[in-house]
Length: 346
Image (cartoon, rainbow, N blue to C red; front, side, top):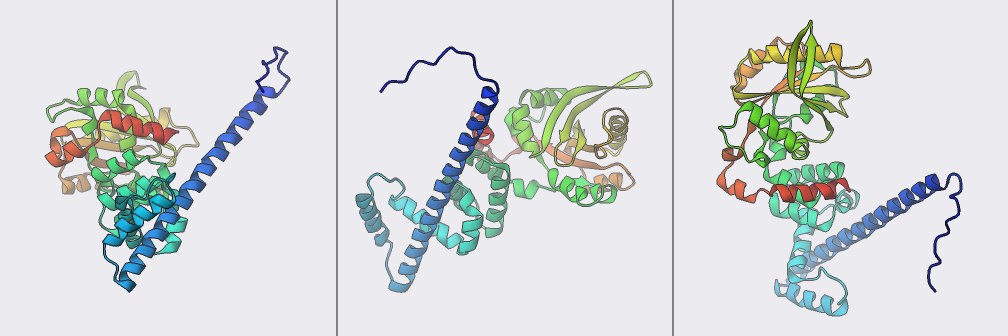
């Protein structure tokens, strides 16, 4: 039976809206089906891994049993992939790393199997694995993005910037703001060396704003570069202006090409005041400032922030040559990042 040609009669009223709604429901159903299949697969792999561990422990089975099991399972289920000796060893390692069935069912089953392998291969401690797993679920990271975040040590950098948020923002906003900044920021994707000037870095960040937003973290939305502020007839320009969707406030980012100096905060504070008076609406929270510099003395930064009544933070940024050689070679290329971001957005 062949499809009949589509009639050219006028489209009924409300048809397009209904079609859009149907497409949305179908897409949602497809996503749920994919998640359900993934969940069952992860749970199956965990159960197989747990059984292997139990039998090796109780009956003294050696490593050779995995080779035998791989052969027998592939013979029984030739249409299924995933029963190689290597993957069966991963199943055993997966069950050994996560002995709690409740956690696997409630949390880890939300992540695809290849995310699980990245957590096992790249991390040693249960605490760090739990942290990255939670972030991957919350922000819908692709495997490439997850690996990149692990290799650039996101956990160690998150919340590490010197700030005065606790003194100048109410809870829980101060906690969220603190978690939203890091130190140092990695700008390796720019391909610039330490000799790069402020404007060169700024221009490159805007050019690669997708990667920059990924490095800033979830919630940041780009507003503009060299944003003009007219104050009493004098013109001033903000390096980079963002809006944070979760904090519901503007974020002013100023770049400094050298070492942090206390007077830098005076300029940043002026910009915060101007944005609060000219840009922010009555529904927005107070504007936050983030000063990024090539280097800083942490104690000097703490002293400089001590008497400031506006929420500010100071952090370093690192360019390509600041990374150890072994980490440079393990970082994904911009093309890989962009491919991962496509997965992230879909």
